[in-house]
Image (tube, rainbow, N blue to C red; front, side, top):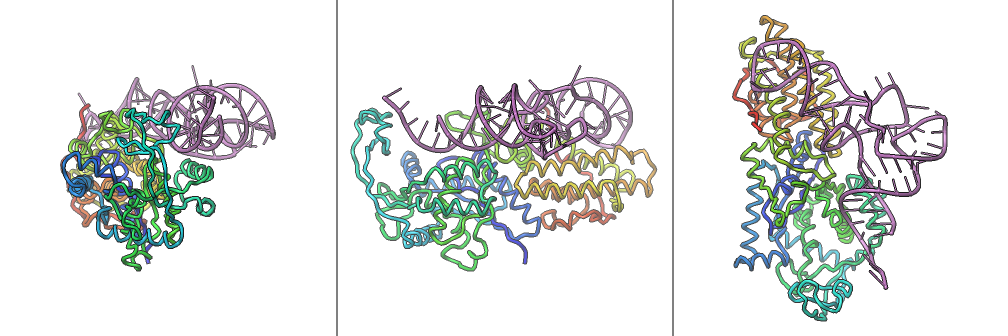
Length: 502
RNA sequence: GGGCCUGUAGCUCAGUGGUCAGAGCAGGGGACUCAUAAUCCCUGGGUCGAGGGUUCGAUCCCCUCCAGGCCUACCA
């Protein structure tokens, strides 16, 4: 019975067009999904879109369309962006899906029945223009700080989730599950927040209706996070397919940006506990992909569309750059120059060029037929090290380190050729041995790099004369030295990653 | 104000209480020509942010401070 691995991305809010920040999250999750598939695990990889809430309603009004029409359009933009990036999600959930409404209601009812939701009257100073409440501090003189008009004293009935009840249970849970939040700095942040005391949170709105209505009080719709977070259980079969749900829940990895760590590592586990469900095993928070040192935003005009990069560099290069050049956790800075530098050194000069020179020498010295590797090759130990290191790094997860480990094998293969100079030797067993080793190294690289660059690695695989794809193989067995059988036609082909001129 | 994180070679980052503190990239020198003007070899006297302390010994432990970031809470 293979292990299973359930990984999710955040669901993206459909007011915004997909940019490389979304792409970074999604590519990272995709690489994790692909890595675990490569390990032979049963993988469920979920992404999707968050489509409810006041902001969507307003955006739709501004465009003169219905919220659903706006959501449909933008969900499609995400879907196609992910297709372009070769994201291998097994499901794409939308919060407007009927299945999701059903699951959220079941979930809300479970929490309600557990006695953790109660109706309270909220009274406060309200600015009609902002559609928001202000405290006395925020609005001195009872005047809206933005619109400079008098605030109205309004009363609203809201349902509250009694989060404060879960303070100790959350602390106990994290005590018992040190891997619950990754990396440690985020874990500390989460623990600090919980220890600071948890307030009950308002989880319903009655001022608009674009959302999931509460099962026991249809005048209210669920607060966006109480609607968005359960997407992870909806897709796993919560409330609709118990057997499936037992198989997939709890999720192994919720991959999230650092800005939404609290929702995922505090509110969500508490909500799950209240419904009698287990928290996710790990919430892994990455930093932001900054552009020019700033977060991407409409005002900074520094949005970069994933499609533009893919068009210029190709999907594999874009994926590789996100995964290799950004260390998991801290913010990373995206720059065109950095992208070109990484492309040229890693992809064109090292990997691409290795493939070219090997194919050429095999053509000239081995009649175009790839020989088998030799047992005990110096590259054998290097390959084993790369596999071990990459495996450990993907598990953390630290994709940039996993790829660095993989590239060690590429560099060593280049050096090995240099040391043996097969192009100078007469055809024969010695040359065959060296070229077999180089081909084997490339085969293993194609396996190890395939979570990052699925298409390019499949192409390498094909040029080596192998059938199938790297994705069909299972580690660690497939990466054992000696897997290249020899006797296969090796194809030269054009440069896999043509060098970019600066 | 409290809490947390970061500060290591020009750049991006690893790392460990104890042989000369590492990698990639960039830079410098050399070699080679199979290869995408690619590759390979050689090349880093870096106060491991600053100052104290603990220790036989600290970059890694403790304290203080400085700088940057994040979370959180405010003040008359």
